[in-house]
Image 1 (cartoon, rainbow, N blue to C red):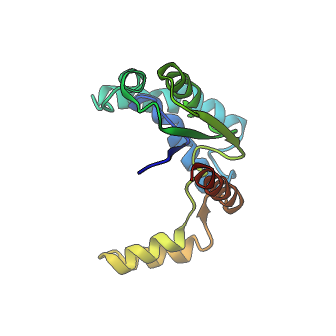
Image 2 (cartoon, rainbow, N blue to C red):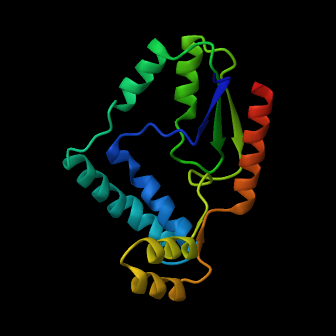
Image 3 (tube, one colour):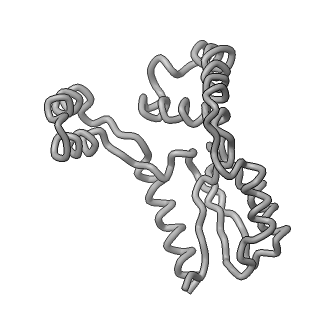
Length: 180
């Protein structure tokens, strides 16, 4: 029996709107430095790359099902009202759709629906080191040589922030303890 549900970095955009996540992932991988950072890169991304990738995604015909609007309608129509729900939101998350979801939960009359704002971005729940990825690729697949080359070239490269992840884990533990 579930006493509650925790939602992390809730994102309810369509496929064409996911371009921001791609950019955030690339910037995170670079550690905030490199060719994807700075005012010139921001202008290039906002004026050309972002819109072009968004149009390509839209023209591909790919879409999430249910659509963002249908998902919120489903929440308003059928989400279990007795289910305690907390949205874990991050102050640097430009893709967060938590306010719309929280509004839908409140319209539904969900008991104890709330949100907790934390430090971080959309990828805060993700901490991955390139060493872990290359080790898995070398161990589990035919890409051993490629994995070793990547590992030596990008030694120490990591996506994510350990401190933000630890704060998130502590908040999740607190939520679980409250729900008992």
